[in-house]
Amino acid sequence: MPDFPSEHPQSAQSAQREPERAVRETAAWTVAVVARAIEDARTR
Image (cartoon, rainbow, N blue to C red; front, side):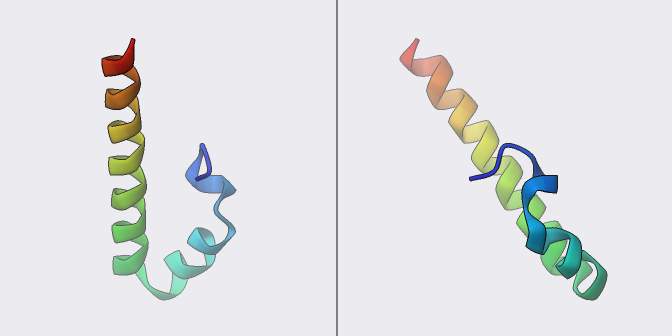
């Protein structure tokens, strides 16, 4: 999983054609990052 959305080459292209899909992908990415951060905090 990329650390930054800008490292996802497909996101920029799909954002122009499919805004809703881009929003869902960004939301899913954000949820994954937050979940990973929570897991890291729990294991420390």
